[in-house]
Image 1 (cartoon, rainbow, N blue to C red):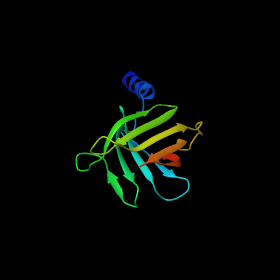
Image 2: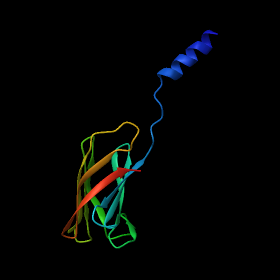
Image 3: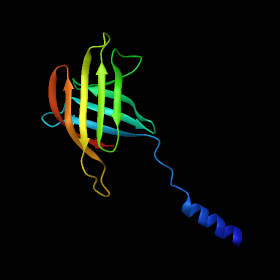
Image 4: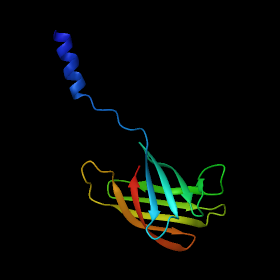
Length: 125
């Protein structure tokens, strides 16, 4: 009986497992594109995909685009994407809105893509 009680107490005190990854999708308020999707892991932003012409392009070794700087914390999300000659292709700057219990986090900001700036809204997915 003591072992059962101890095991139950240990289970109550143990932290629930966290999701290994989650995503944040940001889309222009004025149209369907551009969009940027960020993969968020335990260490921060782990990857990104960009949609500027109605098709997704995942950043990485098989593309000419690279995620050079990225930051996410409880207040904001920032990401910079460059092309093959290190020229800036996209820049995301968004601030998280106050959390609403039971709802995914959301943020508002701007996505500058190839010199054009779009107001964006981001939601966790």
